[in-house]
Image 1 (cartoon, rainbow, N blue to C red):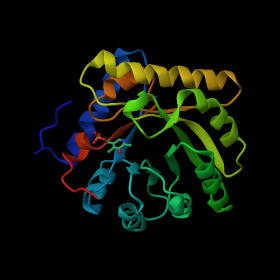
Image 2: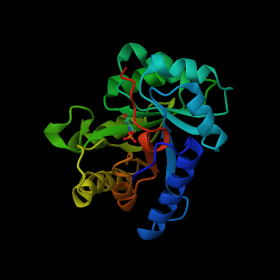
Image 3: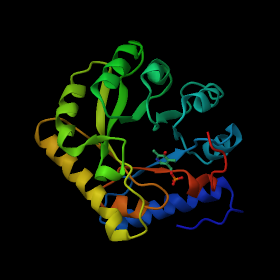
Image 4: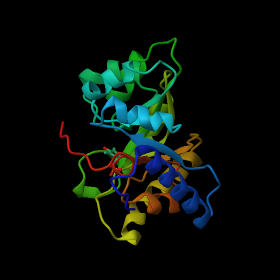
Length: 235
Ligand SMILES: *Cc1c(COP(=O)(O)O)cnc(C)c1O
């Protein structure tokens, strides 16, 4: 997808919503079954406000210190914040307290800490397991073979609500190659569900592979560049 950089954030969001609806039709997906997560890492509060004014209410952040001031600048229930970055164990308390979703859980130790540190008066923290669908070319995410066991363990933790699986495949521009890891993730979700664990989320697809992800069953695409433009700031 190409988005002219002079477009406003509101226009970009509208284009992506249209693109999602078109892809839902094209791949026989139920209308409204693919949610848009706006990835606002490194972006200023004004950009988030512009997206929020365009009725975008789910935002993804990768870096806790970058995210906290943004989270605090909005009233508590206005936005659902999703943590989608690597998790260091000394950051789990603030992640558990400030986010409603975490997409990047790949170890039981982190899951246990998040569950213990989620305040009991808050709703259960929604969690996805990050799966490595690209083999050696990726270091983050649990291996496919180990995912079922982790899913069973996480489903027993009282302050977490296991929602599904997430993956960040190795980048490629080839549409058919893009579909493969997403297809694997979809099959893995089906296998875990056949073991009696209810999952409703496949967090997959970014600016460059969103269509392939929707074709393979994504329920949540995580889009940064196509909404906010190229990232310049490195954290
Ligand atoms: C940055 C990021 C995205 C968004 O990527 P774009 O290519 O800018 O759409 C999605 N998911 C994760 C985990 C990210 O870190």
